[in-house]
Image (cartoon, rainbow, N blue to C red; front, side, top):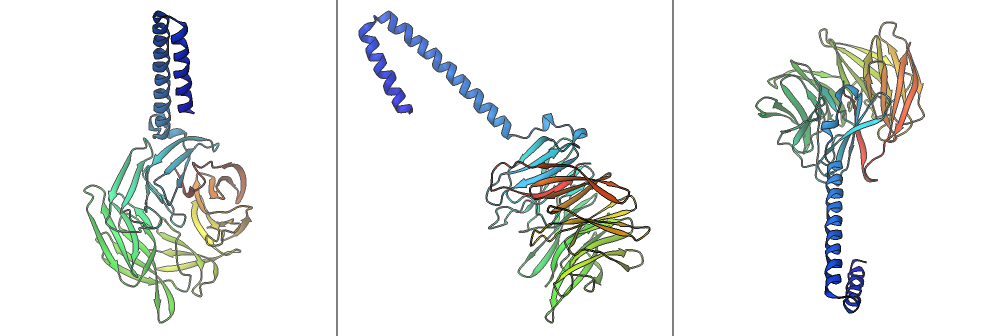
Length: 384
């Protein structure tokens, strides 16, 4: 079309040369040049406007209005984004991030002291990124911590350190990165698959699984901040392959989605850090997953991440030991609690439930519009 347009203009100019004198030709040429400059200016404005749309909107970001964030990513392109929503689930900002495979649905993002921590693994076929991304949730400033390990997954954070884990050639590594000087050291654990890390200011709790004499065994490895092993606790009788756990006061609470026979399980276990004792909560539904505390309630999501079936939520009263299961009509890929609300990521939607007197009520839902059809959602988190 451009070539045809040029030919037509040239033809018109030849006709005009025959009809008009040199003065008129000059006048029209000046008008034509003005039009070109005007069009060029409009084009430059559009390009700048589009480019600004692709940049982060930190200048327009009001931290006080934001409730939750959702991570959108892509395994084949460095085309990720964090979307921010207010209490009414209206998207009010977004932060573009040039990383592939940002986060993982099996491993929840970490929020610590108003900072988000998440692992960009890199392209799905290589997972060759070696870093942790930190985002200041108050002003959206980004920082990267370099850790020389491939395919990192679980992450935990305390005041001084960032911890990650990964497994290569059957051996796992727990990696410690100092926030101040960014020095890194790693601890190798032979013939163990580390699936989950939880930490406080003094200790690291690593959930690991091994194959021993044709049987799967599951452990909690307790390390101090020098990565010295303090204890190894066998938890095989409760379940294997742990991906979800939280610390609450002096208790470590973890969900057991599968038992030692690799079959669906219905247990959540409370481990007393002081007394080294266990208390099991037997639920009415299999596949307990994410965990959260609201007042005297333990909130438990249920979902099979492998089969992606419909999920649900259990509410367990920590005082009376009573619990009730609420079946939902959608997936529950990740769950996060904020005040009296449960935020659930599932089926490319955000669901907001209100906790009220041991029950839950759906308050709001929103369909997440992604940048392209190849993108997917890898995590949800509360900003405050």
